[in-house]
Length: 118
Image (cartoon, rainbow, N blue to C red; front, side, top):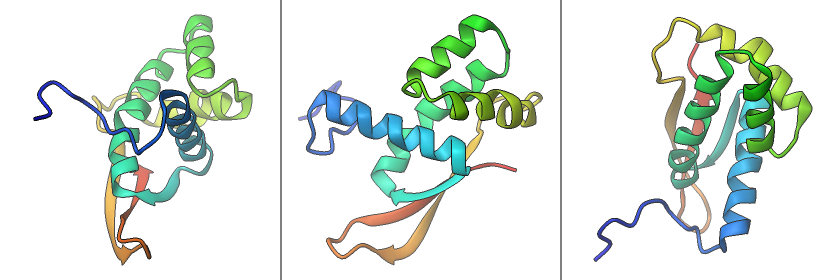
């Protein structure tokens, strides 16, 4: 039984999993909508929600923390603080939407889009 076991491991080690989610988060911030598997989208959602909440208050400490979470990508950090976070200044959470696709990958994985809410 999986009592108190949270999160999916995707058959990867911890550092590979961290790199995967960091890369997905960077891609979502840059492109604002990405296609991935449903499981990866569901794991990515809380990470992105916390980053957007942090980016709503523009301080040096928050910029450094978000930059570290995104792997030091300055372009993604700037876009998150300057364009994405101001859109959600009045919104109390729920910044992303997961839309399931009808298409299934060749190996049977369910696909989905994850995007920022307008």
